[in-house]
Length: 202
Image (cartoon, rainbow, N blue to C red; front, side):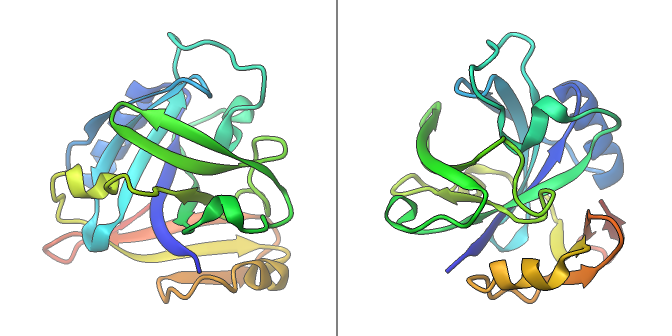
């Protein structure tokens, strides 16, 4: 089974991504860290129900990896935006991977360690509407370390021309917050709600 883990916002620089997210969300993000395998770094925000939001960008102080960076960051340009999402999968190293994924790699960041399924070209299947796949193993989930933001994810909408195929690929997920709709072009959007009922669309 898949379990919703977190949202991913990409930016050309981490400072720009954090500023963009904080302006829209009305709360401050927390410092994350570096991902040495991919030459990226991030900032995080805790959401309700054990979820979190990640802003990620290429780290100018990091090295250029020999392989493609995750989440399609080598191809990313333009304004910060929601580009994909991630689901937890227990026992990821022992499961067959969906089409478009190549291998599972072990990663670390500070005290955190986890397994991640890498896509063949760095970009996730279905134009990044398919989630990245992660297994935290025995590492405490990052959301448990983050301050409460008062924000809750109400809906993640995945729009794609091959909506039926995407829905079939996501049969291991049972989450009423995720909608899959047919559209002429792929797009992800998330609706968050503040503690006082205000809606925010990413």
